[in-house]
Length: 108
Image 1: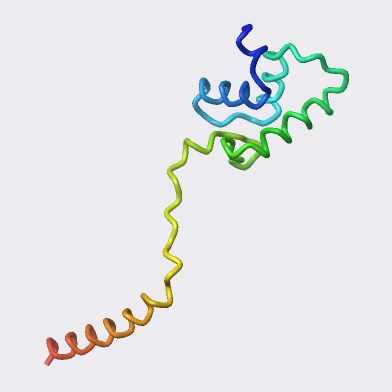
Image 2: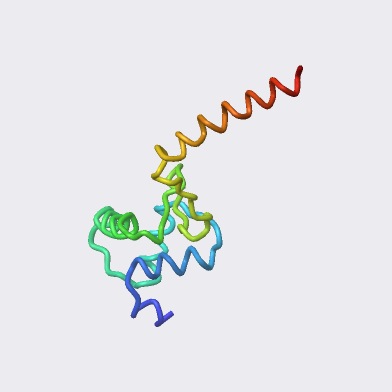
């Protein structure tokens, strides 16, 4: 319990999600963070807004839709396509013509 007192709110949220292993509704997640941190709350909506903003800005977290937040590391990384598309397009046109000619010769 005292471990959470020395952690930032976003680190507590990260740990909660890691232990849970699946996405959590943002409000439940934030309320659990506030509880574990024993954070004094004068305004619940202000506290939720503050923690939500921190989570939203941290790249370790990912919005999953329907008010659910999870961890970015749970998803495989996206494969980025090459930016040298123009060069490969030229080669593709030549290859396509060659394939067409080969296909025509096979059909004869």
